[in-house]
Amino acid sequence: MCRISVIVPNWNGVRFLPMCLDSLERQSISDFEVVLVDNGSTDESVSFVRDHYPKVKLLLLGENRGFAFAVNAGIKTSTSKFIALLNNDAKAHPYWLANLYRALKEHSDIGFCASKILFFNQPNVINAAGDAFSPWHSPRNIGLGRIDSVQYENFRQVFGACAAASMYRRAMFDDVGLFDEDFWAYYEDMDISFRGQLCGYKCLYVPDAVVFHVGSGTAGYLSPRVVYFLRRNFIYLIVKNMPLKLILKYLFPIVGLQMGLDIMFLLRGHFTPVLKARLDAIKNLIRMWRKRKQIQHERRVTDAYLQSLFKSYER
Image (tube, rainbow, N blue to C red; front, side, top):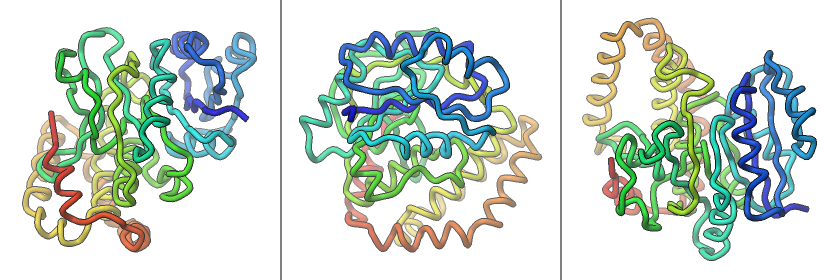
């Protein structure tokens, strides 16, 4: 049994696969497996991997079931104690996997780790240095768009990990569950980070676990589809995970921020995806509320602890 399974979700990403899979072949450790989960690609992805990367395990879903479903399928096929996720449009530094693994081995109180993700075409610019959540801001990548500097060279606890490049203990998945497939894509990583935090699993930002990420390689930057998932899934995120007292405490900033973002997207011509997102979120409120009941029942941390994570928010 391998110590680590690296799950690579893929949909029509053959143009990125040499970069991604070659970087995994160059990792400084060898005791890991790579599972590429193909979401019904119609390009040459599957045949390309079979011909050029015979050691990669292929899991074929037959149709596009979304990021969360693909990742879960990969996790379910694995028996490793540590699960790493890597986007197909990402290139991992040779010590990426070893440094994430070492961080989890050396910190028993940490449930999952975030990588330092840099933009592939701007390797001195931060894509994500962990994820942050705050009632005053949308969930976002820490450091997004900023020049990589000394402040991003320190290990520190953060709210969550961007699933483009991250590592989790299997024990955390066994406890809090897998990624929520109702999210399909976008904020599914923030959702599992929130659930992990509620159950006491801390997240560590590992600055020497470096990945270079093309970004929006599959869905396209703020396409109508992306706008739809962002607007809908934020409501799922809050309804499922935010304790009721904190919802009431931060109701006005949360509603005000979301209304402002809706207006911004409407002014950019995204009327249909915004409207559909809100209607679908309302339609699915009962299902999200049922999930919420179990999540909140299993919560092990206080409101004060969560608020301390909100206050540590950093752009």
